[in-house]
Length: 158
Image (cartoon, rainbow, N blue to C red; front, side, top):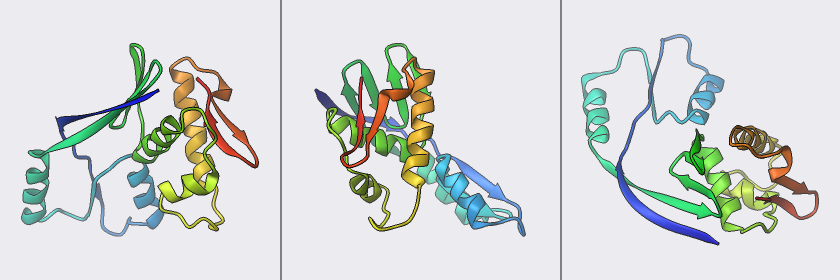
């Protein structure tokens, strides 16, 4: 059973400063994968600092879902007393797997969750699932916690 609850919590903001001349799309993608909300090239302006301060003082509604002894709250993933931090994409993937209640989720659906076209030639989903499996191992699970049936999709076995 998947239980979903909503809670209002302060929103942390991660800001990365990229020195001028060192900006690349790969660097930006890596920062976004790590969960950074903002990036600045060069020295931030006063107006940007004001916007960031305004964002820091806001609260956000964070949903938490439970699946058996597992809990996903925002980007924190818990099993009993142990926890690991997930990236935004990992938490969206895990939530989708939670909601499937152990049933296979087609790769095409996972691609849509991440905003990719279904026919895109990318292994991004598999890369995120590999990192998610590593985080499951940190919580004491085995390698096969997220399994793949080639024609059916991916499912969570807990």
